[in-house]
Length: 172
Image 1 (tube, helix red, strand yellow):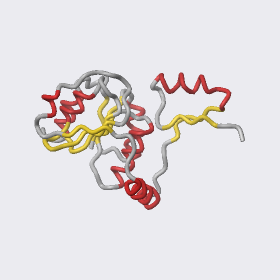
Image 2 (cartoon, rainbow, N blue to C red):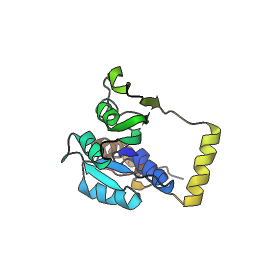
Image 3 (cartoon, one colour):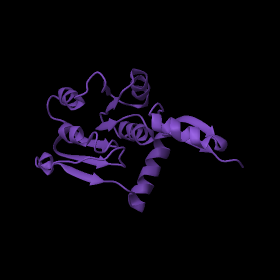
Image 4 (cartoon, rainbow, N blue to C red):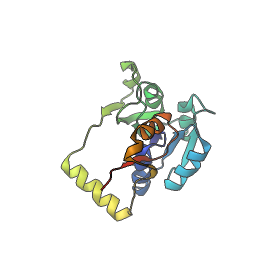
């Protein structure tokens, strides 16, 4: 499995996939963040500043096969590389998108599936919650801001300096 970045969705996906026994490859622009996500369960990591064509590194790590699943959070800026990183018959699960762009339908021809994820079924939700409880998985809280610093919290989130979830505390 391939995850992109170190935000809340990706760090949670790393933990879930690792708990399920999957080999997880993760990308980030920061070696500090890559060291942290190894502790969450990433088997291999790729610094995309060092490897801007990171899909080639994914293929190298998988002996040219590609990954079976990609948790794609980058959108137009990363989708082509995610598809190129995916094995024949693999799936790209698009969860939100940080940027817009286009995807050539030809890139999906080798039996690859692209699916947008909004929310799963109730059964999926219950199964996920059971897995989270069984493996004692906890979301990675990167930063906590008081409500009166909500603007600063959003600026911090936009800076991409965070890792995990950015939380805004509401006064009781």
